Length: 190
Image 1 (cartoon, rainbow, N blue to C red):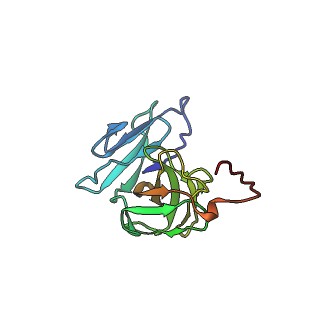
Image 2 (image 1 turned 135 degrees about the vertical axis):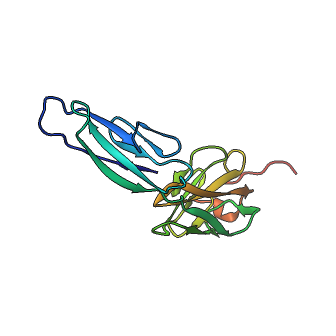
Image 3 (image 1 turned 180 degrees about the horizontal axis):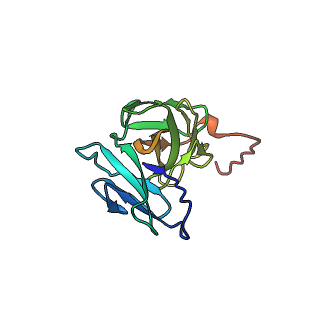
């Protein structure tokens, strides 16, 4: 994940900061990177030392600096615990499926649910086209099956949005709960 750092340089005529990670300007992939605005990006793999130093150095006088220690921890792991694949549900809001997930290694164990098309971006809480999902994981399919009939339900850790688990849901056919409002039926032939 990321962490924003701020600094303040007083005195002198130049307030430009050189950001470093473990003494490397801008950092690297092993210890993490930091941009010119002080936004630190943790490495994808926890380094063997687990702690790194973020250093703000005065551009004007590079003997003037401030250091902050950052501990890199593994990203939480999210697992959808139920239902098990394959998941098939008939369209219509009355045909709900309850999902549950756990977060291991996180700070909050709060799961955010989203629904999206296969290979596409999910929508937090879903929508009328793909189906909706409550904060507690209750999925309500759309009134009619979406194009392709398959959606992806995703659980994400609130404290680490890149820690996710997904499960495909097939929306099969129509049901009586697909019908809402007034309808008129007409038949012809024998």
